[in-house]
Image (cartoon, rainbow, N blue to C red; front, side):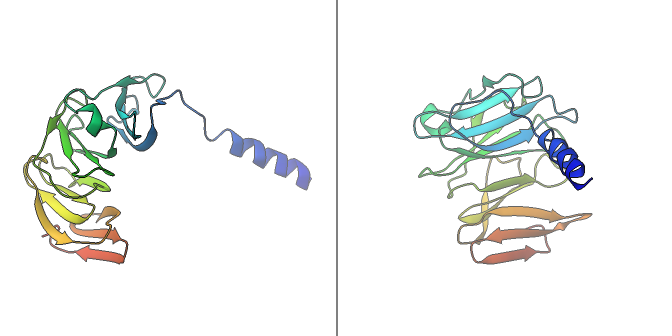
Length: 191
C-alpha cells in the first residue's frame, strides 16, 4: 500500500512543471506576466554575448526578441522587469552586472523601449506601487523612487547590495526591503 501511494505521489509531482520552448539566448533573469490569462509574457535574459528582452503572446509557446530601443550591448545585462498593476502595458526593465546600469520603459507591453534618467547601480528588484502607473520603487545599490512612471529617479536610501522589495498587503505605505545586511522597513511609501 505504501509503495502505491509513493508511486502516485511521484507521478503527481512529476506533472506539476513542464519545460516550455525557449527563449534560449542567455540566462533568464526575470519573467513578468502582462495579463490575467497568462498569454502575454516578457522575459529578460543576460549573457556577455547574447540576451535581451523576449516577448510571448501565446503563453510561452513561442518567443520573439522585443528590445526595440535597447542597445544590444546594454540588453545583454537585463536583470529585472516590473509592470504596472493598473496598466500592464506600462513596463520597466533594469540592468544588472553593467557599469553604469540603466532602466528602460515601455508603454506598449514591452514592444518598444525608451531610456530613463536612472544612473544608479544594479537593478535587483523593481515594483510599481499598487494601482499606480506613476509611482515606482527599485532596489540595488540603493533604494530609488520615481513619481513619473520611471522616467526620473530619486535616491531615497543607500543600501549594500539590496535584493528585493515587497509591499505590506492592504497597507502599501509600508515597504520591506531585503538587503545583504538585513531587512529594512519604511512606513511612509519609501520616503
